[in-house]
Image 1 (cartoon, rainbow, N blue to C red):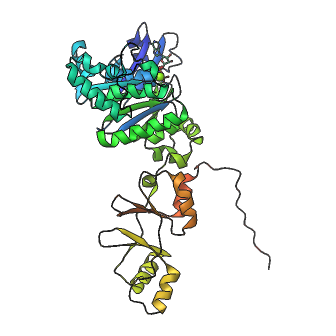
Image 2 (cartoon, helix red, strand yellow; image 1 turned 120 degrees about the horizontal axis):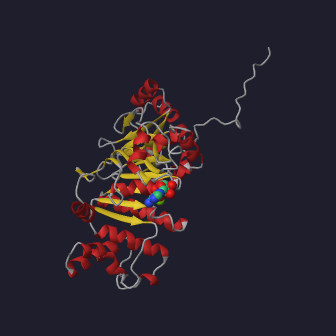
Image 3 (cartoon, rainbow, N blue to C red; image 1 turned 90 degrees about the vertical axis):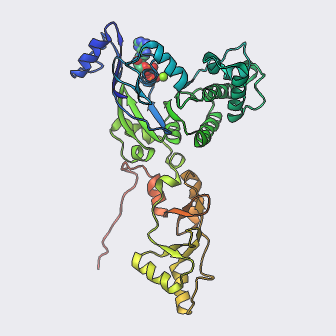
Length: 399
Ligand code: ADP
Ligand code: MG
């Protein structure tokens, strides 16, 4: 999207013209509503891009200009290189059918059709033959955990399951772009979290490009590769979870993030650091000692030649090993807690509290990716805004 405006009223163009000349949304209220003001962003293929903002901030309008259901008053919207603000309505409909799938909050399933027929609906519209679309719909239902439910009626399903049918319908369409407008907002917290996990899991295999709208910042941060924060029609900040948490663009964003539970939105991969130095498991205590001195650290991760983590060595053990004239690390390596990149910080606390060296982050094959020293973990959890509940005490002792 490039400089997209969307105004409602009798003369939307005139509203946009005045906005461009510097008028505010407030000043133009008598003429109509400036729902989206100068929105620009780009979503790379395979990203989950979240649009986040309070109710009325223009999120739904933004997404509707993205699929052309409510064309932008001004600006350009390109989907896979096609400027949809320039194509005729027939071409637009076909782009929407072939390239874009939508999931809404109140997903309207057709009550007289089976779950399977509902999931196949977009394929039917596209004119796909019956057996092909049933096959694809069944696959999509399996993907969202509704194996065997294809023959049921929507009213036989729970709310969470119905929302899954909506997701299956979008997946069955096999479009590269998926637009989700508050798709999980009506669900109970537990089911909602389940759906978030499922979407993340599906996304690992499907690699779709997803624009996901929500008014819940925790949800935004769990799902989003990047998040656009909207306020009163404007995008006020675009960034990763980390960027927004650590460097909120203004007070509006800062207020939002006050209530975010950082330990449940930040992951090990987002806060890990490169290890200051690595010790090869074939090296000896002397080498370890030198490496510790050079890097001013009291512990070192030990890896084999394929960089697979073997454990950790501590300074006092190494000093004893050197004193005893040991040639190898045998008996000196201690266990090191390790986790994967997508683990939330909340799950790291216990292990971190028990191990002075902090935690290691490894990949599936056990290779070391990074480390999380305890102080890094603490810093990541902390709200960067200063608080008056902690004071620093320093008193010079009289001689
Ligand atoms: P959100 O999805 O963030 O809650 P919306 O995009 O639905 O916000 O709405 C943004 C603003 O635009 C609101 O003030 C809403 O009342 C207004 N709006 C949305 N659609 C229309 C419309 N068709 N006509 C007039 N005003 C609209
Ligand atoms: Mg909305």
